[in-house]
Length: 419
Ligand SMILES: [Zn+2]
Image (tube, rainbow, N blue to C red; front, side):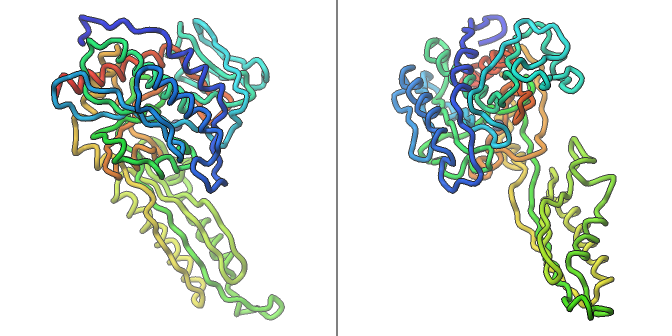
């Protein structure tokens, strides 16, 4: 398929999206089960049955809440098996029950006031991406819930692309796998995925923000725990003896860089050191940190800085001791994805054929794709069009979702062309 023979796409992604956001799939970090909430299976069952109705007869929801399906190859070539993946759960940060979507047709610019709670306003000044949406149809909530475009936009786009490929057998493609996961928002999205059963060579999550973006880099992440052992005495008889673990910990936090190296002072490709918890008493106090950077060297540098601060503070408390433990959390997926440059090259070409300007960018966080990449399934992230996610101001545009459908279809054909 080239730009000179445009495909005739249907406008069905929106009705799918509206059907999926009506189902509450909020995940719960306090739950020990998988999926963390049983209601995620309500959406999983619907998706599996819709996929079977399309003719994907192996489509099923497994006991852990994952949906798997296969679009059979219609090409004679040896095409790598590609998987498209999205997550079914929504964020625990904002309610996802009784979502009532509103469509602002032919957006003309300016602020969007949400009808059920006029204090909720999507302000053009705070959401610069709105400026790109003039003339588009924007889906918002009524102001009382999140929307769930993160990541039901991705699900609707994959479903719509699957339907399109099945209805247009003249479009050649290899075997395509579909995977919908639970519990991504609580960091457990790939805990129970069966990669052997999936059988894919490469994958794409469809869970990015701005139309045209492809993200092939995530943070690398460590956790650091510092345990301070002070010297405890009765406070009435403490002069010259007591060394207070809480005060030592406070001194460490106070010496962290104030104008750099924190989430509130960095963006783009800068990493940070970030305290996430402090518990303790006079004798023992524990400090938890997360460390983020795009490179291994950057992580090491920040961890060395933290230890230097701790050592300096401890000089004032000669009879106290500390323990510093570093735990690896996840790594920048670029290390894996760069071994197969065709994964991103093909996506960039697909985005271009969908009529967008591709933007290759990085994520200041981790994704299911970063974990999948290190589990052996290289997996960058393609835009789904979702904006202001995890909030009542969440929105997505109909036209961006349609561009994502086109990108997925083109991507399937490009892998076949280049095989
Ligand atoms: Zn997401």
